[in-house]
Length: 50
Picture 1: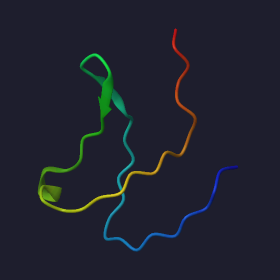
Picture 2: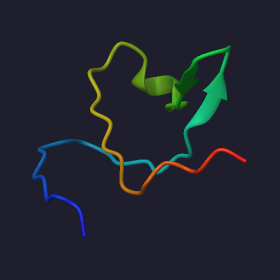
Picture 3: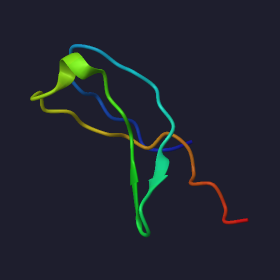
């Protein structure tokens, strides 16, 4: 079990992190969130390289 965090917020979405380019990753957010401040919390261990 990981650490527990309490965050005040407006909405939650659950998404999978996708590879991006040669060394990064990204998560998409709803279009109406553009310009909003967000926080990302990892809820599972990263996938192992295959």
